[in-house]
Image 1 (cartoon, each protein chain N blue to C red):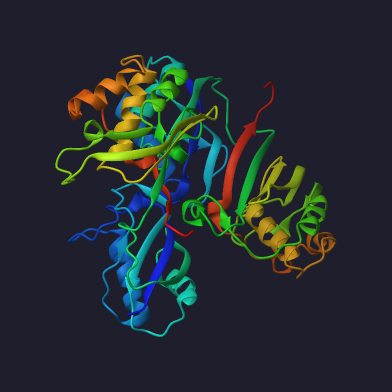
Image 2 (cartoon, rainbow over the protein chains, first blue to last red):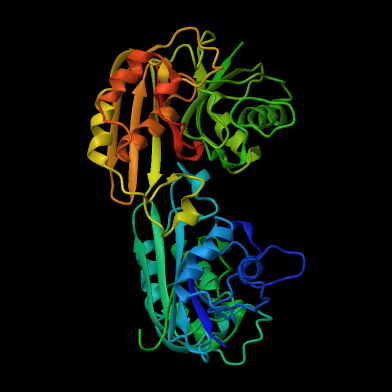
Length: 247
Length: 247
């Protein structure tokens, strides 16, 4: 059966996350309803990463099977014509029948935005974490360096995640200081549940002087969630891109 | 009676404009309810400009009378603690009893944002007009030059506005080309109802080649609303600042 691969963005503010749920508005259900409107097919869409409620995406990848003869590139305008305007398909193309957006991903990139000013905060409250406290940004940046590499990241994993292995490889982890904004960029071969948000919560505690940057190594070695910082709010988090082999 | 003057910003997306209305959520009613929560006083707040539904403010000015002894500068944190987070008080200070935010204003500045890209449009749909058509921006910029000056602006005034005079002086009118964004800046001693949005709608028609820039002069001379372009959508419009004497 032909498979369609989508690259999509969404403003997650009004959704209970990606994954379909009973009686809750989700990205997956909007997408499946939109596909149904176009092709009268009831499909199950699979995504590269299941974003939580309030989390955004700039380059989520999703895929579904279809028996219709709609050319792959026409799915983009067709879906955009029926989807709500806070979900946009950026690309649609034919994928191999075996393509799996999550299992085939080589690495995923997230970013997390922190807004530092009082002015305009009313506009960014759903798109960033608002934090105008004094922060030791250099210390937070040093903290990032301890996250890069292959580690057991259990300390940065929310309980009840159902993960079977906790070892992941973080390729990029840096914090850009853009004045009014802080932007964390993180790329890994996979992420545990709430991993980026717990890393951000921990880095903020470093910024406030509660932890030293090098304590990140101790937290990782402990394999204990309780050793790391709190989980930062969802609205600062963006799934930016997903990379596959031969791209 | 002491008078408090506020400078405030708000994300207008979730409101039916500034002005209090029966059975509708407005900025004025939120503000008056917040004042009531703090001082148990039922006040009528007056603003420099009554923004429409979906229109935003970065520097709206408002004022109210109070008999409480709360120091003027404490109104800012007090109101922010009870207002919804899409309305923020930036400043609060004592004003003279005669101060009137609308009548005393020397000039007001608005800006209007147009977003030109497909990517990220889902995030900006409530904060800009989305337009990725080809536009002759140089022509639009030439069009702006015909708006500057003292004119009868009836052609840019929505019907049913109740205005008694249509003469206004536009001090600044320019269109910045920022690549992915267009930003119109306009400053005048006053604005007619929907004036900025009709000017934007007209400039967009110039950008599309439907009018020539110099036709703005003919439209103004006609004093006929039907001679100008359509009214652009509210979500691109921001009340940026209000200027008073001795500031």
